[in-house]
Length: 114
Length: 112
Image 1 (spheres, rainbow over the protein chains, first blue to last red):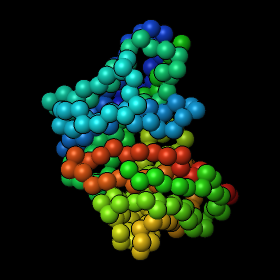
Image 2 (cartoon, rainbow over the protein chains, first blue to last red):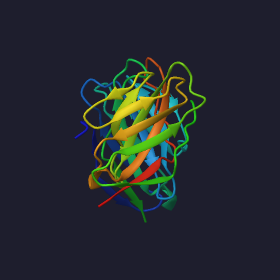
Image 3 (spheres, each protein chain N blue to C red):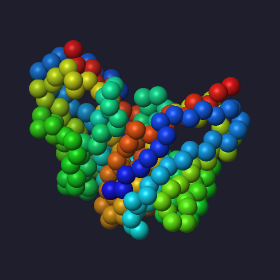
């Protein structure tokens, strides 16, 4: 158990809908990262929050947004969903303190858009 | 961030050591080498990381060459449960902990 909790584990929704994925980081971790893993692609970095502020952006679509709350949990909002958004979405967390700190991943949310 | 090169796949006999190579010839002085693995659709699992010295923990050993242009992850006694995709990642030092950039990794298959 990495200590990173993601909910829900599975989500099935229709095209055009909006969903929210939730991530609770390990206690004390200030950085939260979101990744997308589609069947035919590797792990793609979406966005990072550090202590409530957006710190880095990767290949995140404009239809997607995220935020980190004062209690450090994070939510990834996906709207106007398309079939191609079906994927595994992982959250990871890390303490601050430099490159020598490991990030721990949750078990992911499997999103299926039908 | 420095790019890494790994073989796409490797096999290893159960009980033998698995040696997974990684080339990172453009690594900078402030970049760490990380290894993660992903067992079929599970969340990536941290294995080990290092800067320039060899490192060992309960899971594996990391050998980094003196010029830091390559490294080898060693699983001393591979088991069937070690079958996974192994990712070698270089990550720069940053006070806010930069993201990990995953490549294609090496599919390690441990054979009975």
